[in-house]
Figure 1: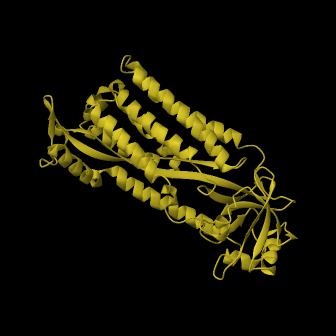
Figure 2: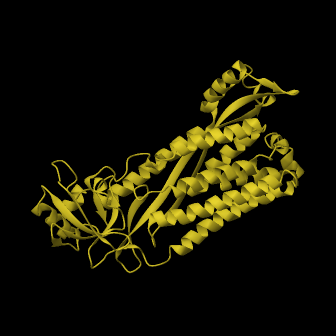
Figure 3: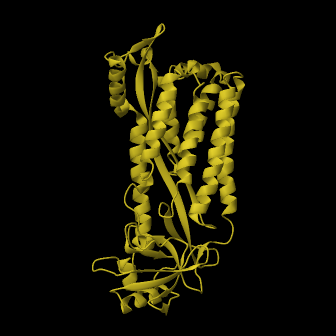
Length: 395
């Protein structure tokens, strides 16, 4: 028991040696910085805090990492050094477009699997290169299982998407009018333990603790795997889009898992599982893009003022307002523009009463006083930009 405890502690400490961790930190910083700059340019203020791309993923990621660790260690999953290095290289290459959709395990692990699988078919001059030859003996049995596990995490996280966890954006439509859209972008760091062959690390770290299984020696290594997704909801509510994409991803994960299990009896199904994950993940994305070509959901309305987004922890968030709802009246005054909304708020700033048409078209009322120092427009973001210079500067 003491050996296992020591292995876990040492394996966790070696997480700092993994390229995954540093790639995730750097890319996460770049993405959040670009988003905040975009929010300030479009709305005049930061809507979401820094690193909100990671928010809401910690609990699910840790739970998934624990389950994957039990599976990996219990079933003897061995992750060799060449495999980890190649996955890191693939992740780094896929990071160049700065689109977290490419961080899906279907792409990172899938591309890694295909490179190693077809390596024997490369010219001999390539296979004999000193940095290529270690990949030829890399075991791939566990890769489809890991892909299915990470796809399950993606699907679960998407299904948990809330109305306040996507990023609002204001863009110019084809007809020269402002429209809104929501970008769902998440990154998740899923740490899990796996076995690591002793011979792969002894030349670099002879002090690393090992334990024996049969005639071979292994150590534990903590792998901080990075996964993620990114898509835009323009023709429907982001929560509705998330449910559709999440369900499809979840069922794809189950299909890949079934094929991976079948590969234990028919090895060729391992390759089939990886190809299905790649094609399936791409199909899900293309289907989503096709569905978003409909009439924009977030567009100007003659019946009121459509809510595009809400600043977290603002008065609007505390009042229970949601993106996609239509503000009809403020303090018994009809509003159609942001100017109308601002002026109506000033009529009775001590206690504001707002009439809203919810997503189902039903009327409801919300009310709350506006205290000194709070956002002057309750923390609401609308489709059309403000026409007053004062609004632009204070947004």
